[in-house]
Image (tube, rainbow, N blue to C red; front, side, top):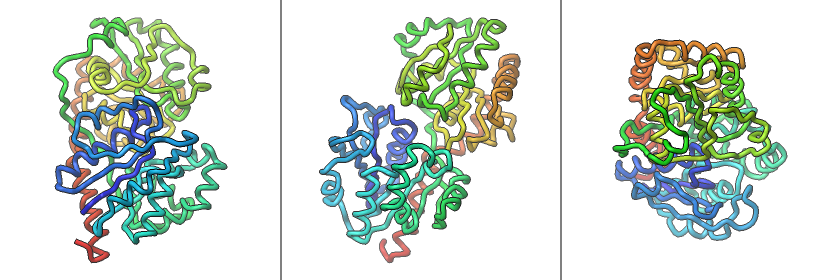
Length: 379
């Protein structure tokens, strides 16, 4: 069995899929599956700590033309050279040129196809760059989703979102995973110096792309109201600026640190020193940053637009309906909690997230590939 994975970009600034796709491949490799990733190198000096730290076979093709389209004339030929009888094409992106090439090759060689939608079919997501997406849907995207051997979703509401746009195809629910262990034995001194780290202070961490959907403005508004009452609190904002207009609209408060996109030991350091994690997203199809926070036993405040009802069910954090008032109240409750109560919540979170290891998720995906090939009489 050979799985050829296609994703439009793998720079760490690309967000969750730039981490989750290589991690999935890492653990599929451990199951004796042959994997190869094809991607477009959009930026100069791209970096990805997961790729760099693991033996992952990846082909990066040079970008030609507009960044939005992710075109590379060499992509099709590079993929075709890797095709075998037992190949499955797994597309982890939609709308752009790499998606189309994956679909084109599947039809040309009569291959099996898995498509990961990764939250792109929610109504709010379809409203972004609406004209481009309507054209892509008409040209190839809808047909691709209708004829795929399997659509991979990471949370149940994705299936409903697909049905709402007329896609009634087989789906497999395989959430993203988490690595409980990390390889870091110390903290990064440079990032601690940058924020003027003080052990007597408490740090609230936000980690996500700087776009409206992630809801950073809700956190800043809440913090503005309580910053004088809780003068031992500082906010750490980690994430690349994807929407500059939105970023410029955010009020820049004292003791709110905008640190840009971070990974590796720098990100580990900030998780390690934080007392609370807040992600007031409008929606998340999984929320890798939430899962990471849970693995560090940091109490989480997030929204019902994320698939983390388990936080509420297990008294392990706050899972709120998104509104400014609800976030204000949750933040006030969390900051006034006893340290022992927050620690207990963190421990309950950790018990939840242990069920989401990459080893378990990779096994589910392997079974999906095997079922698809078996139905076609391929072993």
